[in-house]
Length: 209
Ligand SMILES: [Fe+2]
Image (cartoon, rainbow, N blue to C red; front, side, top):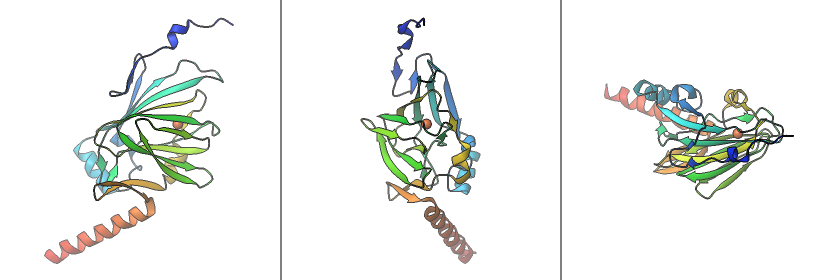
């Protein structure tokens, strides 16, 4: 079989702008993340202010065969919706067995991992960190810092992205700011906290009227 010229497999990338030379960039705006954040009123209010780009991915797809790999260079912008840090939609791979390797480049954040068997974890994603995402595991990245979070993801070319499966249930964990610190909580506990805070604020407003 005739191999292509091997020079074509070389690229420069910029870890700070998350660009790979010659690779297309996909941007995700806030409006495309409906249902991802726990605090719906905060999401609506933020969207009314600005439909900002929350994250982008440069995708380098140099081969599509069974044994090939694809590379994604992700960048999540800093910020929060309510108290919840900016995040990616998160996905399972369409080919569930496909694993992925994440390599943190700059900024600081976390990865939420959620296995189809019900296990879950939150691990750091930052410079000098490697996260191995096994097959059958939904994964989402979260920027908990003040700078853009950038990272490389390397995965089988035939992995595919299944966003719908995790969108139905959403991740069971959320990463929120509490007392100036990134805190991982169960989504249901955080929703209950928001509900009680809203109730308390409504009562206080009612008392003033
Ligand atoms: Fe992935």
